[in-house]
Image (cartoon, rainbow, N blue to C red; front, side, top):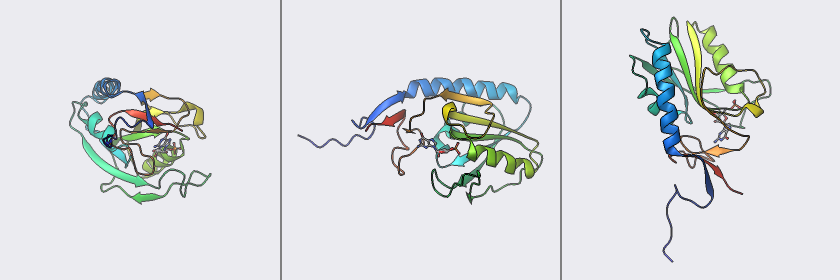
Length: 181
Ligand code: 5GP
């Protein structure tokens, strides 16, 4: 038997949201954002690493003059205290004063990360802050966070792909999957 090397069709994975559904939904989100921000120049802030693929597809669906910045916070489950304190591992390059911010996240889970970032960005003088998240797990919320643009509500399952990892693996899957077993 030849050894199989396919990552995308691994038998350990089941597809939750296929690539064409993601593409279509991001196209709609981009059009909505372009219409909401018409005449303005928003800054998209990507929460690394998970949101990188979503950001690059979403940005190309927004027909506006916009800019980017990147922030990295401590990874899931590690060093995240129950108080909601999140450690910034890589901070923004540019000041936020006077900017319209769209915070781009892969998944809204407990809400601790995004509520921390929204409060921090408000304190830095952003004019407005909205959230665009590809996925939302409403059942898991611990703190109230309002997401303005949501790709898909999903059940309480650990998902991978399209930027999301399991121990740094699977980020390059073109779909959202669930690891079996
Ligand atoms: P929150 O602060 O909302 O609990 O968590 C947000 C972060 O937790 C996400 O950016 C992501 O890194 C991680 N996370 C939450 N749920 C999942 C999941 O189902 N799969 C993966 N890979 N990461 C998740």
